[in-house]
Amino acid sequence: MARKVATPWRKVKYLLSAVILTLPPWFYYQSQNPVFPDALEKKSANGFDFTPMPYDEKPPYQHDGKYVKDFLVMVNDGEVSDIRQAYLNIGPEPLPLDVLQEEELGILHGTRHGQHVHALASDSINDEDKLWLTVQTWKGDTFQVDWPLQGGGL
Image (cartoon, rainbow, N blue to C red; front, side, top):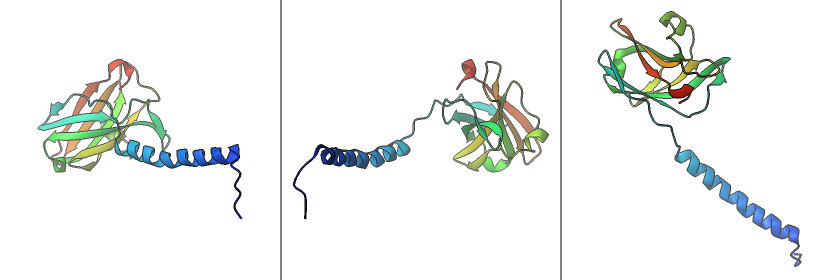
């Protein structure tokens, strides 16, 4: 037997359920249309062109006990398959290759379309810090590329 009295609570429950049903399409739209900060300038070194792009403008976060910041690094010129290993870190100077090899964080990984990386960083980024890319090719050549970070942020 159905009740025919429309109490205020029943009206609120009806409207609340309608609002809740609109939330999944909104979050789905946001997940399919992300907004990223501008990419840093393209730099060339040793026959390769690299363009790093931060995923957000937030400070570094903790991941496996280390502070990292996420980047997408695009290799615009040169073959990704010619790179043996590449690491990204944020700091006043680049970390040595033997120190970078001890960590699983900081190494570029992905496809020829884009390389994802959790760049090693300190808990905050200041004006003296730069973004350092250390690359080793299969021929044994090791080189570094750096980008200045404007105003301690990205």
